[in-house]
Every structure is written in C-alpha cells, then in structure tokens.
Length: 309
Image 1 (cartoon, rainbow, N blue to C red):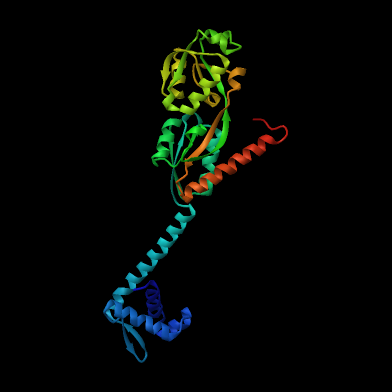
Image 2 (cartoon, rainbow, N blue to C red; image 1 turned 45 degrees about the vertical axis):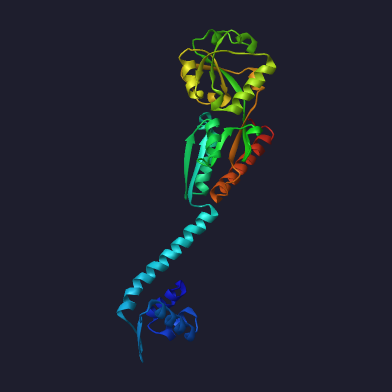
C-alpha cells in the first residue's frame, strides 16, 4: 500500500467516479484504475462496487476513508517535522553559561535574538562554571557553552571568542582599603584573599596565576569559594579581598566596593562560545551562525568613531 494509492482512492471517493477524479487530479483514467486495483489486491478486499452510473464504496471502502485521511495527514505532519528538524527550526538546545555572564546585556541580547529568529527552539540554559561545562561538552550532555577556554583544552572542541573581560578587585565595604585604596597589587601582599578552585575554571585560573607570576604578586589566600557568587558573598561578609572578572561588578553587590587597578586591567580574559566538533545538529549550527553575527555586530559598533566599550 502506497500513500499515492490512498490519495487516488480519496480522490475517487470525493469525485464520485474515476473519470471525474482523473480530471480533478490530472492523472489518466487507466493509471487511476490500475492503482486502485493494486490497492485492492494488496488489502485483499474490494473497496468499490462498480456500477454503470459510478462507483459505490463497499463496507471495507467506507472504513478505509477515515483511516486514509488520517494516514495522509500524519504523513504531512511527519514531513513538516522532519523538514523543521533538518533546518534547525524546531527542537531543543542546551547551553551552559558561566554564572558571571548570565545577566550581561550582550549575552541576554544573544538569547533574545535567537528566540526571535527560532521560536520553535526550546533553550535549556545551565549556569555552569567553565570546568564543568567543558566536561559536559565532552560527554555530550551539553551542546554548547560560554566559557573561559584555553587553546590547549580544545581537542575535539570548536570555539570562537565572543568577549574579552578583565579583572577587578572586590573589597568589603568596611575594609581599610576602601578609604585608602591601593595603587598596585604589591600593596596587597599581606592582605587576606578569597580564591577560587582550579577545577572550577582551569583556563581562567591558570591565566590569572600566570599574570600574577609575571607581576611578582603572590596573594595570601585564606578562604576559598566554589564560584564568583560564593566568593563575593564571602567578601561581603568581610572575610577578605577577592579578584574577580570585571563583569562581576556589572550589577550592584551589597556590602562590596569594586576597584580597578591598571595591573588587573592588563589581564584580559577571553570568553569563548564552544561546542563539540562532532555535533552536526542544525539547531546548533543556527546558534553558531547567530553568535558569529552578534560578535561581528558588536565589533563593528565598537570600531565606529566615538564608540565606547
């Protein structure tokens, strides 16, 4: 049984005769007659009673009418779904975002634009540090991520730089350093610092340590936080100072004063959009294309005379 035969069958039912159906769907009468005969042979039952004035459905034929309509409708729906999946316009996309950037305007604009262009895609956003993101990309439990990523970690991973951040000093509001701010990191050699764990974001951690090594600065670390939210909470509680991405200062944090230092501005922290090279999802391809467009637009705007950062 073929879908074409079911379509011919319904055309004859609606037209009332083979000749009328032939004119309506532009198929020769002998071809229609032959296909209906083959359909009856395949089903091992007669679908029509032939009379001089036309064709009348048998009981089996009447039962087939609704079934044929349903089958053809399902076929059309399946075609539409598969075409949408193939073009990346329906489905799901899981993305990890390092928590510091969840509220950054350029990241929220990217998500908003993707939703505008692909309303049939359900985004699944996971606030994850760079280390766990990379692990989940490698085990295919995450499709893409915004993370700190070093080139040495890119085996099997494709990525593009989307943003460059710097570092900033976070101090408790009642710290002596707020009223008497330091000019350089060397003045903070005896200060208590709150630090992150390397496993949370290896690329970020290594880049920062390497930068401080070149400066000859070794912070006195007395406390640890699992991520920047935890670290800033501990700073707010007065447990010490912290050095965090500048983006962490984008939103007011109670009890914390942020301070820029030239030595911290000099440590650029590239954030990358990353995905597995083996992932051939059309949905992911659409997101990658949109990310590239978004990055190009921001770079062009920043390159305009008088444009700020």
